[in-house]
Length: 148
Image (tube, rainbow, N blue to C red):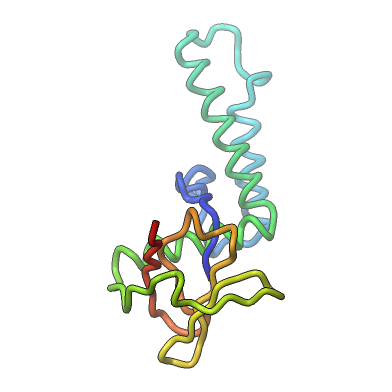
């Protein structure tokens, strides 16, 4: 399965959390940090530069919660993190031309069978942004070659 791009920052580290933390734990960590960095909670004697840094930190904490506090976006983010890890630590199994993949007009996606019997799937919307696709049943990865 391939996904869009939410991987830009480590949202878990923004909250001082781990990917294994429950939603309740994530929420508690978010709330603690949100109170600490909320612009309305800052004292008047904080220097302007430091206040700006705290406001920026609050914005990042809020963004982390928006992604990790929603089951769908958290799942997508976790998959992207995993894909990123695999591309750094696992070799690409094959290079596949997009036109060599099967098109499923009902599901509106491209697919290719993995040697394990699983499936590589790439939606029509993902063809522009995604070049690496993970098998849905094993750890193999293919790189999609898009001919212009």
